[in-house]
Image (cartoon, rainbow, N blue to C red; front, side, top):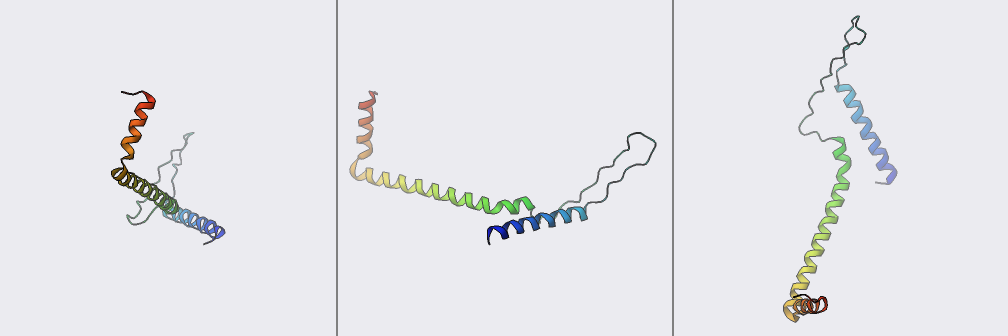
Length: 109
C-alpha cells in the first residue's frame, strides 16, 4: 500500500470512528429553568464490545510490530556475539589474558 493510500485509509478509519461515536452517543439534555447557569446532565456513553479494538490501537500496530522486530534482531545479535566470545575464549583463553592486561594497565589489585 502506497504512502498516499495509507494516509487516506487512516483518514477513513478516523471518519468512521467519529461517525460511530456520534451515532452511539445519546444527546445531552440541559435543564430549562430560570437559573442563570443551566444544569447539564452527563451523557452516558455505552460500553464498547469486548472484541472491538480501539482505533488508536489499530493505527499503532505496524509501529509496534516494527519495534518488536528491531528488538528481536538486537537481542539475537547480542546472543550470537556472546556465544562467539564464549567459544573463542574456551579455545584461546582470550578473556583471561585481556583481563590480566587490563589489571596491569589500570594498576588494579
